[in-house]
Image (tube, rainbow over all chains, first blue to last red; front, side, top):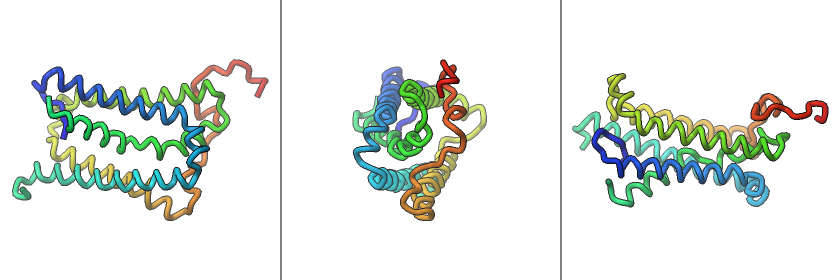
Length: 77
Length: 126
């Protein structure tokens, strides 16, 4: 997992900020062209994408919880 | 500096957590009556706010957590639970409950009050 700690180095922080900016730029582009995207893939397509990302999000949430539990309870390994 | 793969993994995770495709129906229904300028302003505002919050928490996170006395592990468990509940409630369960058109979030207010992005140049023209 990527985290910024003290003494992580300026390159690391810059890379994290670059990742954030790139992601937000993508989000902006998707919102900016929401109308054509919505017209193109339609309501059901949006629902499918939404559910797909919801599933991905749930899996990611479980992964984050497990990482946290591992660091809280080292007995879990 | 971690391996390059870690950063791409981070960016993809971030993209999935922000879920812009789930925001598209909401964005479209909220900005239905807005002008093109207001739409693009709303998009910039949304993405800019997300970027600002993420960068501030990335830079100030250790300080804030240290001040609160919260360990990274407990933050992960709590944040993961919130993320899990968000994913279940808004993306999967809500849609199953209310059918195929649940992706459209009905605008609670009119567009005029929803996007306060511009001083209305000519109210009489509406």
